[in-house]
Length: 103
Image (tube, rainbow, N blue to C red; front, side, top):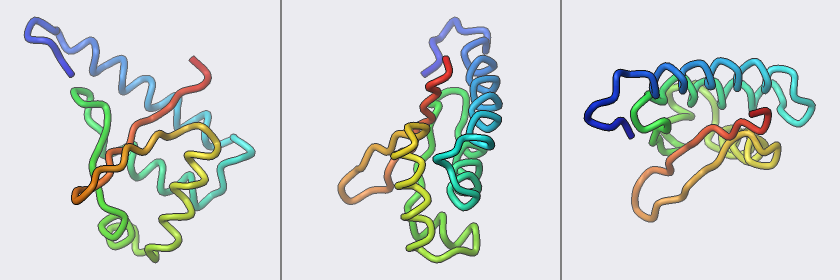
């Protein structure tokens, strides 16, 4: 989260990290095309303040024109590959965070 006196540097650093994350995932052997597409979709909806996003799996599936099951498999692949962390929230949408093992 940004601090009151922050100049926006934290957000800029996150956006650079997000770019590097996408580059890393695009060639990661454990990330399928399906998983990359879902991960990229989620990453582009993360902001520099919270550095995460909150979407339900059905919403992701609807927005991406995919089945719920395809999205579930993709998210599981991203977690297994160690490039995304999912924080479940009972009664609310999960929150998704990038994991950058290359840093």
